[in-house]
Image 1 (cartoon, rainbow, N blue to C red):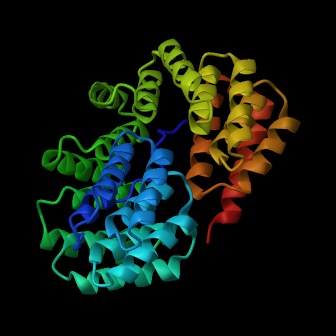
Image 2: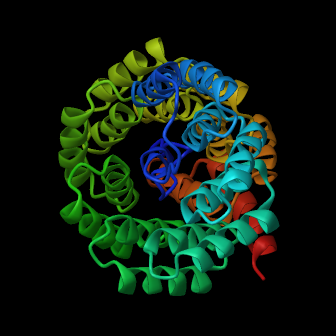
Image 3: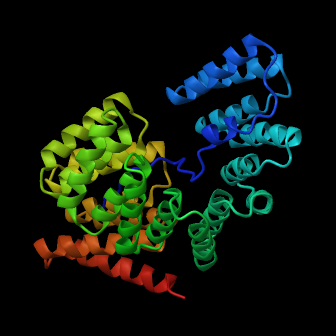
Amino acid sequence: MRTVRLSQRASVVCVASALVAIVSAVASSQTLEERRTRGYQALTDGKPDLAVTEFRAAIALNPKDIASYAGLGDALQRLSKPVEAVKAYNAAVEIQPTSSELRSALGFALIDAGDLPSAESAFRRSVDLAPNRSRPLLGLGDLLSRQNKHAAAYEVFVRARGLEPDDAAVPYAIARLAAQRERWSEAASNYKAALRLRPDLIAARMGLINAYNSTKSYAQALEEAERLVALVPNDPDARAALAVALDGVGRVDEAIKLYSSILASNPGLAIVWGNKGWSEYGIGKYADAIASSRKALEIDAKLAYVRFNLGLIYAVQGDWATARTEYELALKEAEASDLTAAKNDVKDALKRKSDFGPLKEALAFLDKASARTKP
């Protein structure tokens, strides 16, 4: 099993661009404006560390500069510092408490910080401040979907669609919800709707590729992935999506070569290591597959699908004792979808080695685990 690596920060609200528009006070100092401008340029260039430096310098010049606090919050989120981002957004909200955009930005930061009750309060206040706008509703719906309140989230998204049907973020949000529920056809349909409205919406194209890969529509996934890489040729997410699609259409050597190229520049991408291991398993390079999978787990020990992959690799080689250990570790982190995929992978292996005892043991073990997790 492999997966498309999607950016961890895929919020439906474009914080930086939305918040610049709400600044009510023009900076009195040209130096302040230059600092703030350099901060937003650093965000555009993918340099959040530099952006933090520039925004903090701007705030030192004017502690009431809302746009600098907003930019600082955005940069800190990109650096995976949500608690600090919350402080920045709270400072901005104190200066302009009636801003719906700021409340939504605060809500996303609170989600990342793990404070879901406060996030819900922030989003609901954002909706109250802008009842005729779709974006605050999208934030609230995103929170509800993360809490597995799928029906409530869908109702909120439908309400948003009624307010602003031409906002690409609405079908994109509905598509993400459908993907979370593994309703891949619905997800693909809505990702396409989002792309019709905004062909340059990278996250929607990534989602569409993931939907195609999840239904083994690899030729379509490859077509979309090639389009995506043409748009953002140096983006590791896009290149990883292309590698998954190449593997799917049987061009495994090309996929492994591409994974290796991505990892040469981005060695900390755990999912890409995991995907590389899966491709290596597929062509019988078991030692390489184990090494790549172990590297993925060194970076992120909670990747259940990689643990399941390791279990399968050991089982295929006849080492049921080690395979069982990996399966037991995987079950500590696995979601239901991970377990289902792992069972399917074992069944695929059994088609090639139908009477192989360790694989039969693996399937029986996973069947028992699946029975235990059913309500």
